[in-house]
Image (cartoon, rainbow, N blue to C red; front, side, top):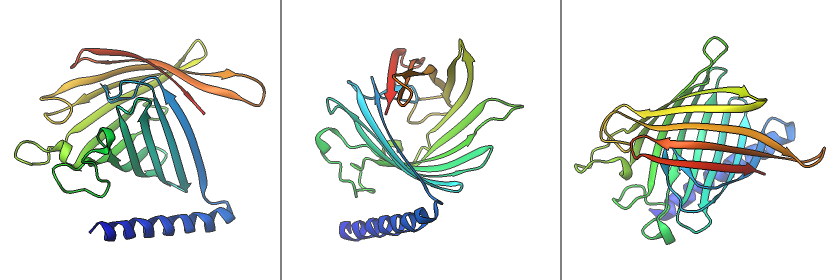
Length: 238
């Protein structure tokens, strides 16, 4: 079974990269990559690492579709995650499906091709995001866990844990400031009942070294009212 899955994955990669190469000759595919360094990895109000993390990303975009990969690796190996995702964008909405691979420390019982056992460290996330518009400058993102052992209850039933985040951004003192409020509407992975699990404020800026190079930086506060944990986080992107 692992051999079959490996061959299928290889075929998908070969097919996609060959199409990217062909389209790139016509300038139809945009390829982008970045490396971000964060003081701590924070996701939806939960602090997952014990040290700074390096977070690379790679995206292939053609028209309204984006195929991408993103990862986060803690410097002390306390946390690692690799995500693969497909996105479809319109002027007002973004639809995406993300496959998350979240291996345990030292990759113990964390086989990449194990999608079915109780030890599997994969799960799928379906996301719908309203980007906001001039008349309603607030983004609304809804994420539902649609597959994965991490989201099953003691009876092995999928809980379809849901996270909803409201976002807003403005400028203060010439700097972009982003605000976010995240909640879960029912019992699941994030909380045992309806609860606010994430309140975040981030400020974005650039450090200009010369006319050819500037370094994007950010700093922000994250608080989880449920766990009563507060973190001041900072990051820069290459």
